[in-house]
Image (cartoon, rainbow over all chains, first blue to last red):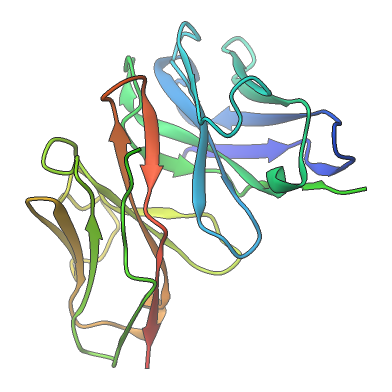
Length: 123
Length: 109
């Protein structure tokens, strides 16, 4: 059974940094691309970033490019999101999601989701 | 930039058919996917590749595609289907990115 458990959320001041983690189990983590998706309070879903199964390619939404970095450690079955220069508009629940494609070059769709971790950017 | 457009809300009575549309210029070339999200919960995939239903999703959920519009149809709507529904596709015209529709709130009257 696929399980994705996010952690690392919390309250941070504007301009600050935070690192989110997503612990994966129940599937061969090193064979699947992974995503981060966020949802601001009362708003819709926004894709944040994708990383290929082997970490060789990464893609970002324009809204976070240059500030956020997605990475993975396949030996620890863990996905990360390093968030720097945080802004109030980054306040959201952040979900990690497993892509559907085995060893895909680019993402396809979100087959499984974690329960999310809340990031609040406020002074 | 590539966008997906959904109606903000759809209302139906129990037992009726709900249709939620999603429009986008690239949909004739890219698959669409649908997610259901209930309050306080993570999204759940209900349709993939325009019309395929994942295992465990009730048969009353179906998807279709015509030109630049894809449609999620819920036949015989039940109270438990009240939720937000999001369409999703990918934009590979340049660098890869994922696009979501703005979401549709389905209300069961």
